[in-house]
Length: 98
Image (cartoon, one colour):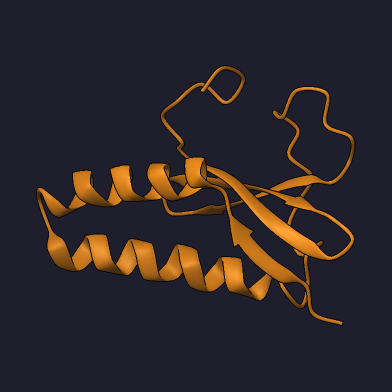
């Protein structure tokens, strides 16, 4: 059974921020990063446990996971009916206090 994938406002804002930064040097790279992160997120609808539990998420109840795409860490939460993309971080940020 497929789950709906939803993005929080915070995650959308983070992805937009990083893509705008990339676009300052390369619009095509910016589009590629956005496309690949979104496509990977969509795959979570069929296999939400595809990626590892996020060891950096504070007090993780066991349903917060993450995946990496290039220099970005995408954190998401698996719920009964849906997958929620919580945030996107650049890997240069401290994973404990992003």
